[in-house]
Length: 103
Image 1 (spheres, rainbow, N blue to C red):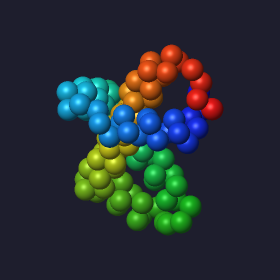
Image 2 (cartoon, rainbow, N blue to C red):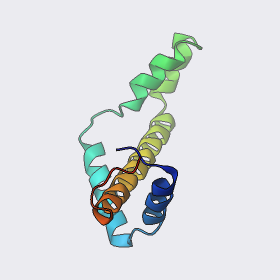
Image 3 (tube, rainbow, N blue to C red):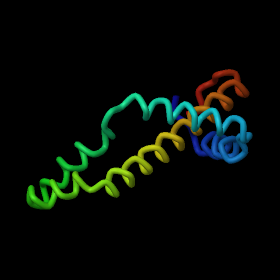
């Protein structure tokens, strides 16, 4: 399903007005998914990307830096929450409009 501009705006309005209880459920689901991973899946990809531009010793130090891991965790969680919110909003939109495609 692809959303046209009007549908995207409506989905964003739904997203902006999700009740607090729904936001808490989304956050709990994201936290549960993140707890399934022993390592943040972004870190290996980020380190692989960085090897194109920087030397191994600098990347190794970066990879061992707890603050970097915490920042990556926060970024990943925020991204997952945003996507999960949009997914819920799109489902509400689809139910409201009878599952019609909005392209």
